[in-house]
Length: 236
View 1 (cartoon, rainbow, N blue to C red):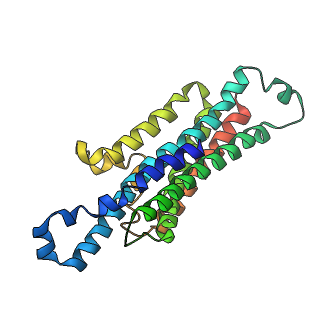
View 2 (view 1 turned 30 degrees about the vertical axis):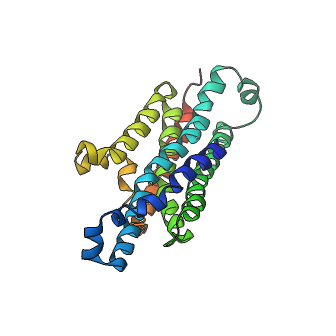
View 3 (view 1 turned 180 degrees about the horizontal axis):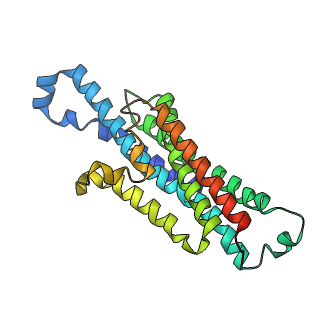
């Protein structure tokens, strides 16, 4: 999965030079703005492109993360966990094993996405290469969105696993609202119904630390509620 993600993000990165040269194709704009302004404008176009693609990366990275959490219900229904339940292993321990795998797979997928874009993007650009710190900032802003998605998956699997499809609906809507919201002229509130709407256009803007901390706290609360539900509900 991570290899495929690296290749996909590398494809996006490989067109950075073309994206940045959009303004250069218009001689009138070149004369009006001048070479320095054109260079800066090209840089801003690329940063905005990265900002838009960050929602795509989070959505794709969320897929293996959700799949790992949803395995709790699948493995239980298939009888794989019967012998585990028979031993003195707590439900918290069992759910934690799925959660850790989910978080690791999701964050690795997200990291692989930005790594592929960074390497391929800078390799394709003749000048004005994007610093690795820029991708670190985007990762910092994107990771809490992923963790909230995982938190929702834990919450649903802990309380009512039969509604696990709601996690996929949440993911699909969040991606659609942010990625296609401008084209569809969705209002601002429709985008911010999900955590995807709070990406704050990093790296066009700086990382809002208060948003990051708040979203991390929300993710923790969702996970805790999911744990409580899983430890108390009937597993049949």
